[in-house]
Amino acid sequence: QVQPVESGGGLVQAGGSLRLSCTVAGSIFSINRLGWYRQAPGKQRELVATVTSDGSTRYADSVKGRFAISRDNGANTLYLRMNSLKPEDTAVYYCNDRVIGGLPAGSWGQGTQVTVSA
Image (cartoon, rainbow, N blue to C red; front, side, top):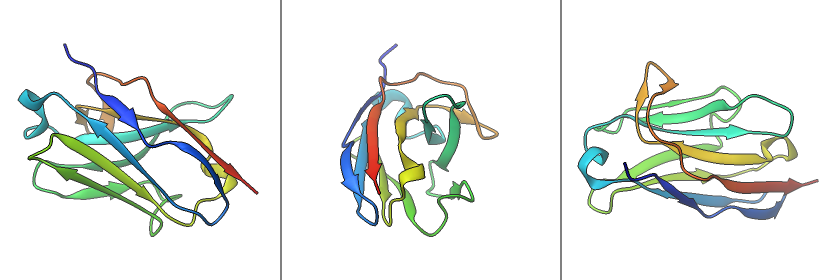
């Protein structure tokens, strides 16, 4: 099975913005709910946002109003636009290519590091 591939992470100052990208196998991209998760050092991996095949979105309370998840079905790519970043957003961000009931059920990518400095 082809794993997702994330990119776009980096070091940014508090208040800054980043856009993460994740390419997913074409055979499943148009069907599945997709999601972004993150894992900070010493913490469990947590849900950030999900998007269905028809574009319906859900967000963790901690990122509502600051992050936006979207998908380009033609390019098999999932995005996460992150604005007004805070130091507590620092984590490795992962995408999952199949989300069921908010839980990751598909393949993980290798992750992309996001570091927000104060």
